[in-house]
Length: 298
Picture 1 (cartoon, one colour):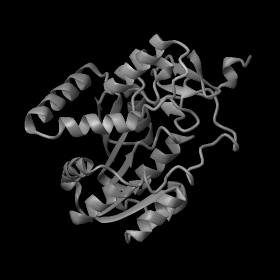
Picture 2 (cartoon, helix red, strand yellow; picture 1 turned 180 degrees about the vertical axis):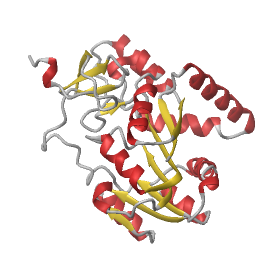
Picture 3 (tube, rainbow, N blue to C red; picture 1 turned 30 degrees about the horizontal axis):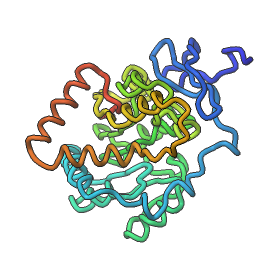
């Protein structure tokens, strides 16, 4: 058995004091005893690494219509940072956030490691970079806003990404990101069965404290981190499977599809939207939302 010194350090705070929480997909998962982020004990070998060229398909390069309304709200929140109008989306996927920002007058570009996603964005008319962010060689102090939705949990060395973000973001510019939370209610209720803990695709889940330590180390002058979201359908499905024991029934549950359906239902009318806002406010107050939303200023 490996000595703890052979495991990688916490990707958030770089401490080595850990507890082992179990194995998932042949990866030992660790919990940092300093910042409580969760992470795989080692990085994947080349043959284990996620292949992002097969990650996207024609089907998952589409998003439900109700998502577009939420993206409009998000981009409207970026308006106070509009100086030169330069907007970069890291890991843009279906390019819907870029499309929304372009419609609101931003000069948009993106960086993405998935070739199908890059080809999709170029068909939409965007000039985008295929590869890791630090390979793009964007100018210093260039962008007003940089976004990274559900990206940093995938990065083998997330501090390298953040260091590059701080270099290319203008002083006073905004870095906006979302990422799964290591302290979310779904994890508390389901443990390693939570589908978001999924190495080698997700190599780490940051706690609020861990994400803050990373942002501070990278040089952001200020930041705000909120928690939001909960997946009750997945929790119910997890307990249902436990009650069935070794049932051979084929698993057909999709967390993403279930979450989309729930969110669409909650945003259909103002009353349900208020309920959703109250729930998210409670999750944030208790710091138990399943996701972190980061707003960091250079």
